[in-house]
Image (cartoon, rainbow, N blue to C red; front, side, top):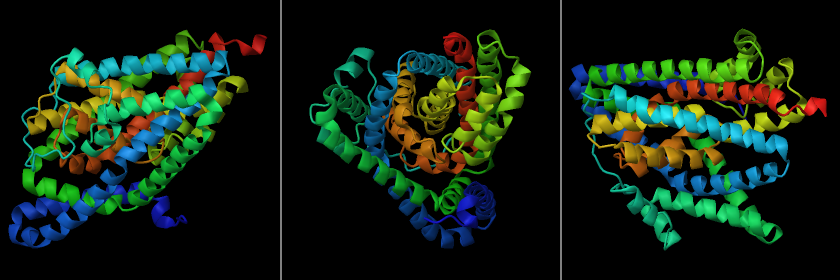
Length: 409
């Protein structure tokens, strides 16, 4: 689709849709007759929007993971730089996952909030009894049934198996990989097209939620977002800042000064992929060799999803508490492990986190209708998450400037 003023400012329109939906929802609390008249139209728009997103969840998740593994496999062959980059991103993801595993549970976010929802989940949840029982059910006996039943964990494992085997047999798998690549591109194109209707979808969904649940819902969501952003800042300053200072031998002040243009672009566009040129320039300004930054930055835009791990854990716990869905530490650990797999192929574009949350909420057994609330606040969450992820991409490059020492060879 050719870009125009609307598509170039889609984030602004999403904010407008969010604000208008909140205002209309509050109006509906006092003008129930008016809201009752309009509600069927809002339900229609919301249902069409949500179903369009659900339509592409499973093909997008499967294809993106398979293609992500193909990209990582080819990068791994580049040797020292590729290996260190992957090790760095895996390490920071583990740390982010641990933070996301305990902090939301300890803070009890979402407790005391009760959403009025049709609490159904058409995909079915993963029943967490024990780690052993969960492992027993990871391998799908019938992959087609896994897709039909929406068993996201089995789909993730199946995608990983297919991706790894395609790497092993190389040329013989090329025809299949091309088909999967086409499915991935088609899915992304459809998702991108659907995103143009996000402002309308956000307006409809948040208006219904506000009118049904009232001001307590907004206050609770606002408090959760505030805690989430404080966590983002803490993680960026202490984890990335510490890495840059103690490993990369660059002052924290200089790092943030040089990387700020890329960070602000990521914050405004919600796209780590679109920020690659600015991230690369920031790395160059910080003295990172091209041999390092040319690999670490694009790879980071693809698989570095530290902030998304934090975001997903916050949202899963919040909505679990708000809907009365028990989320144990064991289940949250499974969700975060699944998120690590999803991050391999999570698209670095606006709205990429929506597909991830849809998959993870199905694993956790959250009501499908909760997607309406998440989509309403996704942009607010995603802006900070993308900004932090981009900071992590550049921080990785700065640290590897010292650990790789390619300029001394």
